[in-house]
Image (cartoon, rainbow, N blue to C red; front, side, top):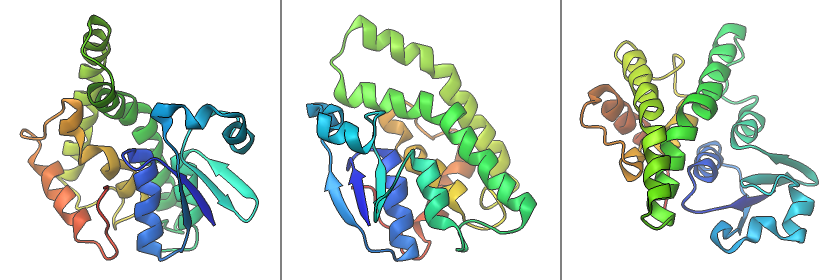
Length: 196
């Protein structure tokens, strides 16, 4: 197995975390997106969308971090077989990609990798409400649950990746004690590895 990875990317990290927790050996290929390495002709043959992460499982190539999570987690405790709990995991995976990542992750990228400018300020302001709304949904759910779907699953892994570094995107968690407690629970899971 070969994994095309960006070390500081939450989308790459979530896959590395699951790989570690499932105990799957994988060759890591570092891609420097800031230097355009995901837009080279060679990389575009691997993923025509020009994005990371990408998993190559002996010629079966799969992009999109949450699709990779589902692929790797199938048949493990990280993706329940029960139809309803399985569907709830996917509900949170879609929530992460549609209601969470576009606000919290992109704000983090702009703050860490783009120079201060009126454009950056406008981008961050446009994402503020969406990021806060996502955190409020998570806080409400975690006020009644230890994890997102009964037990620790890829739903937690997907949401953990950018939530635990949300302060780097301008979303501190001071007002979200349930999220902070959940982050600590995730860090105690067997096989846990830090992002960097």
